[in-house]
Length: 240
Image (cartoon, rainbow, N blue to C red; front, top):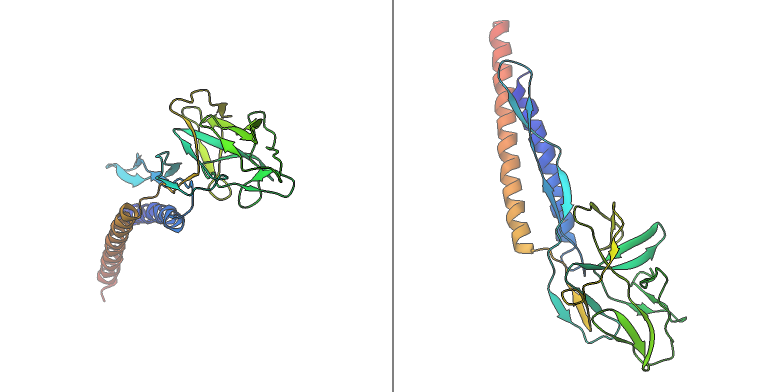
């Protein structure tokens, strides 16, 4: 079989993976703290035959670490993360990290995400406030005060360089390398009363969608022309 059929199929598989990632990005344009997913591909050369044939790899996904826009809400239980830090939350599968700082307080005074996962302090324990007390005051280092009393601090963590981030529930991620506690609160920290938007650029993603569609059509046309050529060759050999 002609090698360009395999080349075309590998291109279509790569385009499909890129389209899946793009569709997920577009579905989360309004998700607070969401990190856009991008794909990177490599050229693979086949050593067989007199001439090398170039294929495309299946691709590797990675999350964009670009900061999203901050929006003021005025809600004392909303925090936006500045810089490269992440907030820690406890999930059923273990600790995850998020940039979505929208918090709510349970009847017991525990600060949780909107879906009920507790936010963790610097020691890895859920933050406990007085549910009947005044609204908390949170400084840029994540220290939480209520009624003038220090009641704990939001755990802020930095991902080590080269860490592989995998998407978890909602806007959270997990890392293949344990994050380290954030110590630089000059360039990093939180801002109370704000929420960080998704870092997905919808205009750019729509441009990518158009490009993917055109590339997929071009590959499909090439495969159809190859199929027609093979059919014509078989007919000629059969004398029909």
